[in-house]
Image (cartoon, rainbow, N blue to C red; front, side, top):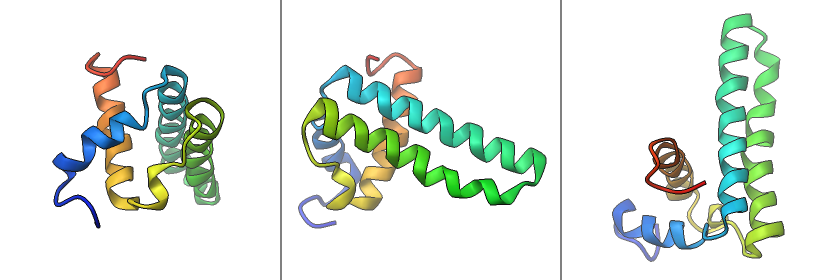
Length: 100
């Protein structure tokens, strides 16, 4: 992960790239859909539905970046830290530590 020695160093940058509340909301919607799709496919054993996971997750997140944040998603430069950042931010939004 060039530029960051740890996720702890990366995460403040990640949050700064999500300063627009509608971008964060788009991330939240996409992540919630990912959870719903995975649960549905596991419960129904309709595994072909898993192709929707990246579409929902990345689709909503990237829409938030391009439409509201007007920046390039961190996924392109820091794919693993960015994925982890999505879920950390999601959890913090659920707990009220990051605003909707």
